Image (cartoon, rainbow, N blue to C red; front, side):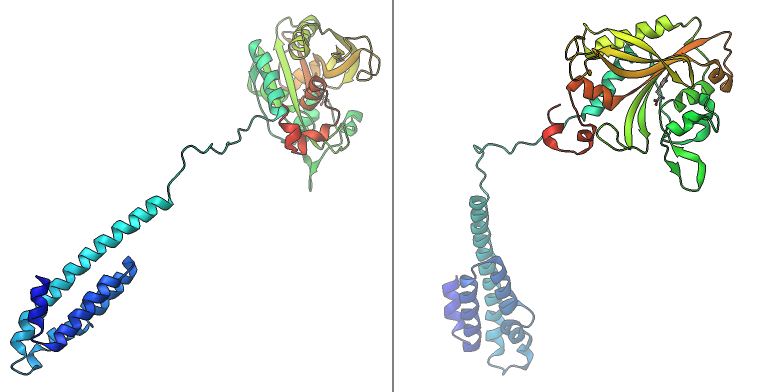
Length: 350
Ligand code: DAH
């Protein structure tokens, strides 16, 4: 058909030239973009062919029927040539893309590193789990605390020497607002809200103005509080002994040493028999055979007074421990700051 058309177009030299030129450029277009340029050039509104077709009324009389008849055929033929070339080019482009983007499915995959909990979180959860198993509930409280909860209601009135033992961060311009120095204020918040019996475990961050190999300005504590009828110091000792065996091994023993805390009476510090030398004495336990792990005691009746508990009806024990310290003892870590350096060679050991 195109050969026929070629013959027919000889009747009009201008039309023939436009057609030949368009066919050539469509055939030469090497990409879809070049083809589109050729389309605009030869079939667009401003193309020679379109202009010629529009100008029919002004043509000399003998040219009009020729251009009218063959001009539109030429246009149709060019549109078909364009569509055919477009199809060819797209097929080629797809083939090339498929070849270029071929994936080698036999290559080994890139390993995706899997994270894990920080040792502090692991240790905190292990402590929580132990007490949850005894029926304790987890309670939490604010890290920005008032001096009432942090000190006063814990039987540490203003001017009490124990206040100055804590290197407290105060919130600027607000002497009554501070970063809690321990998790003990949450004892008060729990007892204000709930009647006995109370068995709670209180994990959280605490803050002190301290920084060296064994102190960081922020660290973690886990607090415990048990208030019920007939709670005695034997309950405290049995509970903490079971805890020490769970945490440090079945062979561990504990001992209670008299101590002082404002909110417990009597108060004790609790040691665990050294897990490194088994109690015989070594460098870790400074040859004493014992390692201090926590503070504890029987809740002072004055504290019950602040929360309207009846000291004649209930008694209780409380304890508080540093999570970092427990983790250091358990894993033989000697510098507390290692926990917060974020050195993956350290972190990934646990
Ligand atoms: N709050 C104390 C501290 O930060 C630890 C403590 C000692 C908590 C005795 C207690 C306790 O609940 O009974 O050093």
